[in-house]
Image (cartoon, helix red, strand yellow):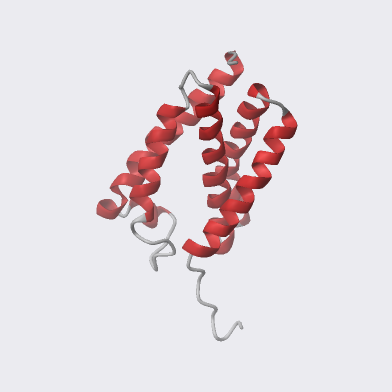
Amino acid sequence: MANAMDFAVRVCESIGFGLHSVLGITEPCTGALRGAFRDDRGSLPLWFWPVAGLLLAVVALANFSGKDEVVLGAQAYIATFHIGAMLWHRRLNHHPVAVFAPSIYVLFAIIVTTLRVNFWTALLGTVAAAAVAELLCRILVTPPEKDALLG
């Protein structure tokens, strides 16, 4: 059951994902994301960026499905991906404020899920997404080497 607020939030999500999908898909050729995040040592495998870009493009389109299950699946991916981005920033010791940029998409996913189901389902889904994101972050993200002088 969609309403105007639900639609507006999904439009915001999908505009962002459309733009980010192009950046991800072209990352191996451009290095734009690694450059923007000053990730010169490759904290993520190079294949991650185009795969993530393709999935973001799929989610941008799936977000407008007429089936609630597809939209809710898209919201689950959105929450997982962006909680993962928050964890990535923390794991790489980026400025603490850096986690707020991807967190807006987690909030959007919570809003859409709450409007379509209820708040408790959105909360439980977000906790599950955080667990999956933590696991993937531990598997995929190479943390920075500790400085021998700083311990």
